[in-house]
Amino acid sequence: MSYAEYLQKTIDYIEDNIKRPITIEVCADAAGFSKYHFYRLFTLFVGVPLMEYVRRRRLAYAMQEINRGRRIIDIALDYGYSSERSFCRAFQKEFGETPSKFRNKHFAIPQKPILKKNEFIILGGLNMEYSFSDIRIEELDTMYVASSYVISCNPEDEVITYMTQWMDDNNIDPKSRQFGFDIPVSEEQRQEELRGYEYWIKIKEDTQLCEGMNLKKIDKMTYAILRITNPFSNPFEAIPAGWKQLAKWVDLKGYDPDCSAKYYKEKYWLEEKLQEEGITYRDLYFPLS
Image 1 (cartoon, rainbow, N blue to C red):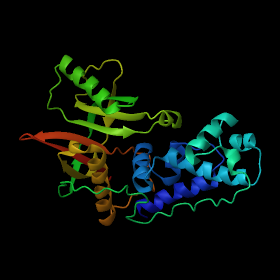
Image 2 (cartoon, one colour; image 1 turned 45 degrees about the vertical axis):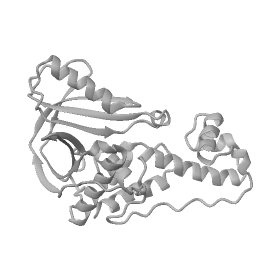
Image 3 (cartoon, rainbow, N blue to C red; image 1 turned 90 degrees about the vertical axis):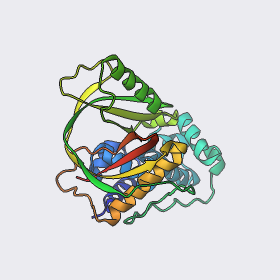
Image 4 (cartoon, rainbow, N blue to C red; image 1 turned 60 degrees about the vertical axis):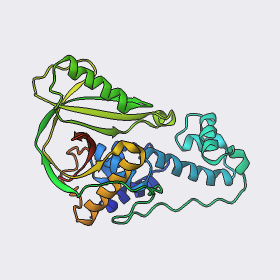
């Protein structure tokens, strides 16, 4: 089975459980992936994070019930909102009007997405040209890392500044490999426009850490790797474009996931910043096995 076919299981699960509690952990398990691997795959193939997709689908179903004349408070509670007020606020943000404006109007729930191999639902209109390397396969040996994360409006800069200062204060080799990646946030945090970012520094197992940091043992993993030249000229387009190109390559080469027994092994989509001869690069690591 392809990545798309596994992710389709999640889309089908959401439709069947639209009024029940839905979490990233449960959806990842339904698809057969580890949490962080699933989070990145779903966002890439569907175009929005999981809980944003769930929110939109629930509001679409709620709209249909409003058209049929059900009480707003009953609909709100059915779709996981704590009050009629919070539901109406979310509804108006999505549709531009209060629920009462849509009474007795025709509305058809949009069809659920059908994912296909090597196809992304939302590509985002990327028009710029970027310099990408040929994709290579590389194995990273088991390593220990100092890990920290931040959830904020600007998590990358905050966590990297914090970790860099720790390196300086503790005489950590500045050439130590460093990796970062997006992490999922709660629906409430997303509504506040917060994002999450985790940062790693490769260290020795007995390195003394400070508050706000954790020691992690990262299992050996094989990656498909793509390099972006000058990624920060327009990072919010260049880096997503790189991930899409890398994922397409993985799909086309037939690196289909084996979710039969190893899905519990966490897989991380890593980003590594490098500088060579005055040129900045970013390597993207798509985990394979």
